[in-house]
Amino acid sequence: MSTALAVAAGMLRSTKSCPTPGWQGGRRELCYAARMHAPRLWPRRAVLRALGASLAVVVVSRWDRLARAALAPATEQALGSASLLYVATRRKSGTRSTVRPIWFIYEDGLIYFTTSPSSWKARRIARGSPLYIWVGSESGPFLVGRPERIDDRRVVEHMGERYAQKYWIAWLGFFRPDADRVSAGKTFAYRVTLAEGEAPPAPPAS
Image (cartoon, rainbow, N blue to C red; front, side):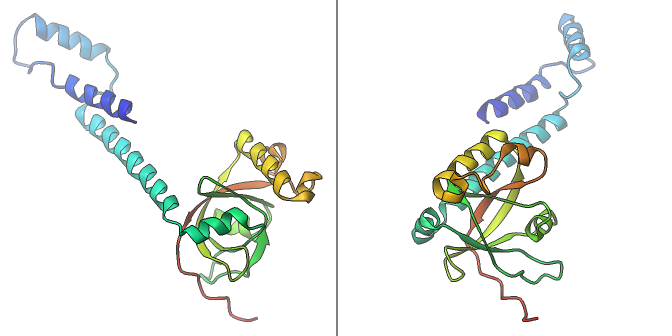
């Protein structure tokens, strides 16, 4: 990131190196030729936009790291030892859905899981729903997750390996994340950024 900022700063300095239109001499002609052959993304306004975008990326990446580090030690321990997560999503009405158990892996402060494209979870996540998470049981530590759909083959293959280590049924080959199925859109895989939060109220009884 520091390299990108340095390049942008160099671009900004280069816009000041040319003399004003009224300046006379050989330097003016050289500068005019350089401008004619240079990319058109050199104006100061464009450079400032690039600097702003770079700084935004730095801020967001630092915020993500802080958010991951903010989990309570007891929650971290529960995520490392739990076999199941109990999750819910937000309906169109704004109410919470019913809670369902899912398999998952937890690595580097992130949760990974898969689901069917036709599931309510996948549909609601596509509409922007957060993932409401109870770790280990429906009364376990609560977290709010920001799910992001992924299709990186290496990540999905790694998920499959970890599932096989964690769940004996997955070791036999059942319900194991499969990169080919994810690439074909037959299974959706997600990476979830976690944060502490307050659990939403249970849905009204039907």
